[in-house]
Image 1: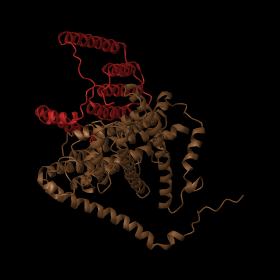
Image 2: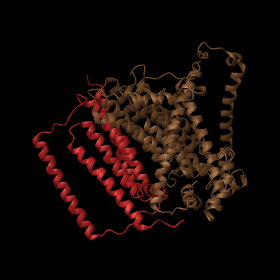
Image 3: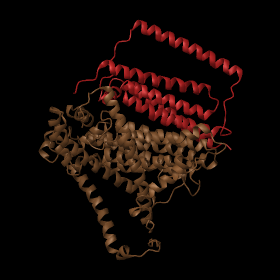
Image 4: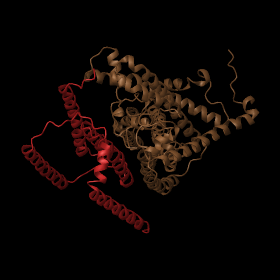
Amino acid sequence: MYLAHAHLATADQLIGRTLLDFLNLPDSLVARSLFGVVVAAGVFVPTALLIAMLGIWWERKVAGHIQSRPGPNRVGPMGLLQSLADGIKLITKEDLRPAGADKLLFKLAPYLVFAPVFAVFIALPFGPDFVFEPRLSAGVFWILAMMSLEVVGVILAGWSSNNKWSVYGAMREACQMVSYEIPLGLSIIVGVMAAGTLNMVELGHLQQGGIHTWLIFQNPFAMLAFGVYFIASLASNKRAPFDLPESDSELVAGYHTEYSGMRFAFFYFAEYIAMFVIGGIQAGLFLGGWNDPFGIIGFLDARWRPVWQADPTFANAWPLMLLNIAGAGIFAIKCILVIFVQMWVRWTLPRPRIDQVLYTCIKVLLPLGCVLLLGAALWQLLIPPMPGVPWVDYNPYLPSDWSDKGSLGAYVAQMILANIGGAVVGTIVFWIFHARALDPTRRHKKRLTDPEPILT
Amino acid sequence: MNLPLAISETATATAVLFYALALMCAGSAVVVVVSRNIVRTAVALMFSLVGVAGLYFLLNAEFLAAVQLVVYAGGTLILMIFGVMLTSRSPTSRFEPSKSEVVVAVSIGVVLMVSLTAALLHWTRRNPPQSAPLTGEHPYAVAELGKALLGDYLVPFELASVLLLSVMIGAAYLAKGRRDLP
């Protein structure tokens, strides 16, 4: 699937261009830069903070329910405002610094952790046009680069605190990073290889023909690579079971032991935003990006985009805008599902020792990643994938379109894999609801910790 | 509406960004040399590397910029800090170079700088800089790079990877031999 498609190459700046047109502003560099600043400050910062706050609330809810307790439920409906209350507490808290700490690095470290995670939002495709920089040709790689820069901040935080626990956390982070980085890259390459592009927007457009065109179902190796990436991404975000750098039962809080107030909150925010970003990579690279499982959004996009491109005015842009909003919703749902699985894993599995983590990453995931890479390459050689963009160059549901290009094998294989994947997800969902339905006490049980109404 | 931006405007922006990034690179590089604290040196080196990545971005070499960040700022630098943490006697270890070391280092640095500057001046005099399209779009630069590496430059590419492989095997052998020692 190698594309140099005019349709995609010009699919940029729908939002910026039409908004400037709508507001009757001249299209100059200053206007574009101002627009970028406004988007970054007015859209991405609140979005990121909202993601972090809701993520923290949801993590505590999920943890509570997995441990058979209600979780936060006092502040606001269902405890939704708990994170806000915690945030106010953290802002008003004293900003402590240990006497022996390296002052400059201690203050710098939280920003070095937070800024790269935030910079990832430049490339995340919330919709075909809801991307800050759609022409970033190294999009996937940019995200990887930013996620690996975050580690520097973590190590500096641990080192500059002048605390044994912190230094241990930082050293664990360093050796963990050295081991997970390679399987992480290898598993991403398997997905990228199936698509033939690193640009997140192109990746999304390539997967717009329904669930069988999603890259995870391109070949069986991509499915396994998704699993490898999921495990490695848990390690990359220091999430349990790989939360060795901050393992609170041994290292107090690891690298951020000495941080308090807003500086601590930066680390916390960075972790939850990174969870969303990892969900975004998995959604954008493997799970079809902003596309629905039936390819409806892709179909409409392929219909309406040429109309807008022929006459790029605001009047022609609003159907695409609506499509983008729907796509952003689907993208967010996919990210949230991945985040949920991350939380599920965290509150279910015990934490391995650091040598076990290194063993898993280097001796299990790394050879597996190499095998997957070879396997995916051979698979593409033997069963040629369908070239072109679904709905634009071919109808993804018509086998005759696929056989015309000699890719009937890919059609059959992808359909089988998509059905297997759908069946697995369906079984899990059915099992969860079935278990709930079988357990009548679950719905009516009066827990000891259920809150009593506060009497005044 | 869809006219390309005015060339002068883009050129100004490029120049401003270039000087900002160049200042960042050069300033951090000076800190790398001057700072006595070994970890602060590493941090300054990171800012220098990030600045170079920014310069690559300015030249539309996005893939190279991302590789620079992943390999140098993300990978090599962390290995360096890791090595410092493992090997230094105290976490606040400092560089205390002797006078002879300073003299040797400064003289090597001066010679290198003079020769590089002379070579660069000579080269630009012979090949005057052309107005290269710094603002053009290369959306498929990664694909071109891949084709070049696995096509025209296949032999050097494979030779380099064989070299790296042998280095890796050698490092593993050395690390393994060390374990038998008391």
